[in-house]
Every structure is written in C-alpha cells, then in structure tokens.
Image 1 (cartoon, rainbow, N blue to C red):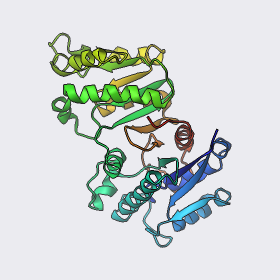
Image 2 (tube, rainbow, N blue to C red; image 1 turned 45 degrees about the horizontal axis):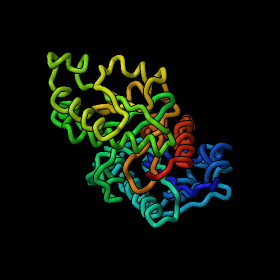
Image 3 (cartoon, rainbow, N blue to C red; image 1 turned 120 degrees about the vertical axis):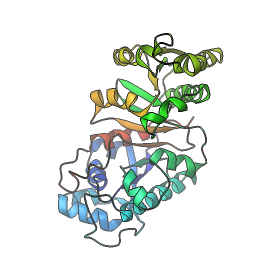
Image 4 (cartoon, rainbow, N blue to C red; image 1 turned 180 degrees about the vertical axis):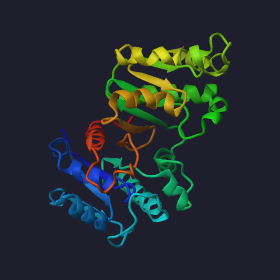
Length: 316
C-alpha cells in the first residue's frame, strides 16, 4: 500500500499543537504509515523541541515554514490574534497542497475559536473553514472513537438555536453523508441510526415535535432512496446500542449529543473527520488545552490516531 504524504498543521502555536505533532513524529505507528509534512513555523517547532526535549522528532522532518511567528518568545497558553492568524494560514496552505495533489491528506492540530475571533476571522471552527476553502456545500463533522462513530446535523451553534435548525433537508443530508462516511471507512452494508432531539424522541409529540415534523420524514425519505437507516431513537438508550455494536454510525442532532458519549469512551483516541470534502481531513478530537500547553504534559494519542486514520480513509 502506498505510504501517504500528509500535511500536518501545527494548530495554535500557544496551545498543545506543536507538542503533540512532535510527539506523534516519534511514534513508530506514524513512521510506518505515512510521511508527514509539517505546515507551520520553524521557530515554533524549534522552541517546542528544545523546551520539551523533543529535538529527535525534527531529525529529517519536512517543514514548510510560513513565517507567521517570526521568533521565539511569542505568547503562550492564551488565545491571541497572532495565533489565530497563524492557524488560519497553516490551514489555507495545507488545503492548497491537498487540492493540488501535492499531499494525500490533511491532519490539523487544534485551533482556538477565540483566537480566530481575535484575529477578525469569520469561521467558528475548522469544519466551516475547510468547507469554504474547498468550495464544499454539503459537509458534516464525524467523530470516531471505537466502538462509536457519530455524525452531526448541527455543529458550532448555541443550543437554543438547534431546534430551528433541525429541518428535514438538514437531517436527510446528514444521513446521506453518514452513508458516505461509512464508505470512506470501508464499512460495507452500514447500519445507520438516527437520534431524536427531544427526550424519548418526543414521545409522540408530547415533548416536542421535531421528530414528527423533520427527523422521521427525513428517515423515511432516506429509506425510500435505499439508505440503510432507522430511527429516530431516544438518545438516552441509542448510544448504548451503538456501543454494543447494533449500529455503525449515529446521526446526532447537535454537538454535545454526539460528543459526550464519544469522549466518555474514547477521550484520548477520538478523531474528527470532515465528511463531504474533496480532500481527506482528520484532526484530534480535543482542543488547544492552553492550561497544559508547553509543559510536556500533552497526550499525543488522538493526533497519532488522526494520522493513522488519514492514512487509510478513501475519498468518496
């Protein structure tokens, strides 16, 4: 099998991104499965390697130096406009490389939504930024932490906004992308489950009508199109069923509905996959962790898992 060349962005320089990237480079799992191309700042990498005792990781590493952080001593452990601009520049260059076919996939280290905002940038997160940069209209965030896989109808929005965003069209689109996600992972004959929004999946309209008005109609339309999907199911019991293997992927209505159970069972190894893009993109399923950044305490397991997944996913 071809060893893939993967662009790896450093994420927010003030966070744990540089550390987990360097630690991942030392992993035998990574060395055997892919060739990383580090997209970021050489000054950041050199300072992280020296401070954290990871200089061996940079031996022979290919680094694309964008010069966004020109010298050592930049602000650490806090979100800054400089960090936000740097993260965005790293991502833009990595996407360019992927669209031109110069790399086979992109793996992104964590960024800070607050830093993006401080920099005056419009995106609420990686997913929306990647969709715009690739001209993608239909996309979704999938999180994988075996044995669970979840895909989200709504992503980065206040919980109070969610009910109005649960439309038949959005749910149907996400069910379709769930099928595509399973194909990317090589899952034949996938079993797709759809969670309800309300307690007891609405209890026949007693606790809310989103299931009757939008979710169930979307499930029926997807079934009519031949997709192997069922639901909506009450979310409180659905994730146990998925955990024991009854379903391959769960379509979730909002961010925390899917991420709470996934992080409960796979906090250190979860992977974020953007489904629908014309490129392969994965990332660790955690944030910048400013509180432990630059202290040598960051766990690289999720970054290693993201690199391994990017090495095997198919573009569908």
